[in-house]
Structure formats: structure tokens, C-alpha cells
Amino acid sequence: MATKHTPGPWKQEGNNIVADYTATCGVVASVSAMPNKWETEANARLIAAAPELLEALRDVMGWYDTSDVAHLMTKQGEQAEYQRTLRAARAAIALAK
Image 1 (tube, rainbow, N blue to C red):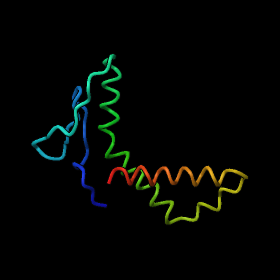
Image 2: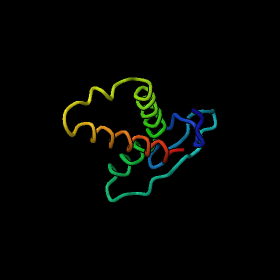
Image 3: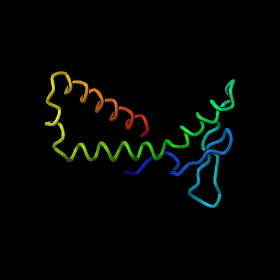
Image 4: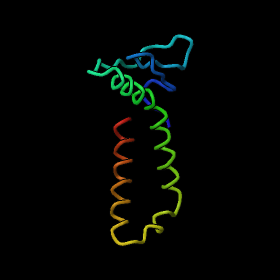
């Protein structure tokens, strides 16, 4: 599926997240310094992982949409939680479009 965002992979370089898809990498985002350096770097790593996380979520949802896995959720209450999780996954994908 085509995306409108800068193609991945992205990588963390200090507080910056840079695109690594051409020889001329560009800064995609910059994370504001948090009170702790480890928190700033963790936020940058999470943002840098966004393209791979989105692709993995799309793969999972693609698998779900083409399988018959819903029938496996037979315990009482499990189906509602499963459906809530699927709605959340679809909403997260929609946010990234």
C-alpha cells in the first residue's frame, strides 16, 4: 500500500530521526529534549520504528481480513475484546494515512 509519509527505514541519530532511503538522508523529525537523556532517546527510537510498526500492523490486519480466525474466539467476553483490539488496530492504521 502506498503511503504519504517519508519511506522507511528511518533511524535514530541522537534526537533526530532521519530517513535512510537515499544517499541524501533527511531529518524526518526531531525529538525535544526530555528531562532524562534516556527518555529522549527512547522517544526517538519509537518514532524511528514507526514505518516498520505500521507495516507489521498492516500485515497482521491483512492476515486477519483474509483468514477465518474470528471463530477461534469462543470464550464469553473474548469476542468483544478481540473486536475492540481490531478496531484499535484499524484506527491506528487510519491515523498514519
